[in-house]
Length: 162
Image (cartoon, rainbow, N blue to C red; front, top):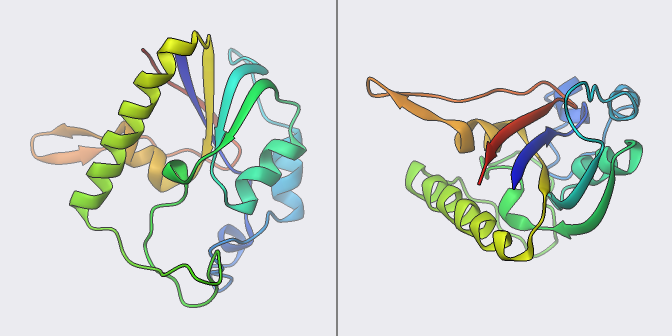
């Protein structure tokens, strides 16, 4: 089972960091980026898409030419909680900053969750998510320093096979 990432298209925050709404939308450029995703060696069809619940990820999927058999909206793959100055995703949601231990716990949960998906014989899974989460999921320790993969807006990436 191959696991791929897709980072959402350009968001209002990516365009202007003063627009720090947690659930900000894509810009017109972000919509266009989503329509023009560069597939090259990547599939256009996925057995399962696991998508962050934030609007910019859902808009990226809706604007793209990606097809799929199954779709899951999953909070595990949403943006890393780093705080913000303004809006909340949900009226009752509390914003807190995830520390390194909490981020690692979430990374472990995601890996465990994906291993559980093997029993359903999905040939490939696409995770539509955010740059910080991709970086943390791909990070490797080299001489005491972490190095991960940064994705551009609307960039696809093959992560691993499990």
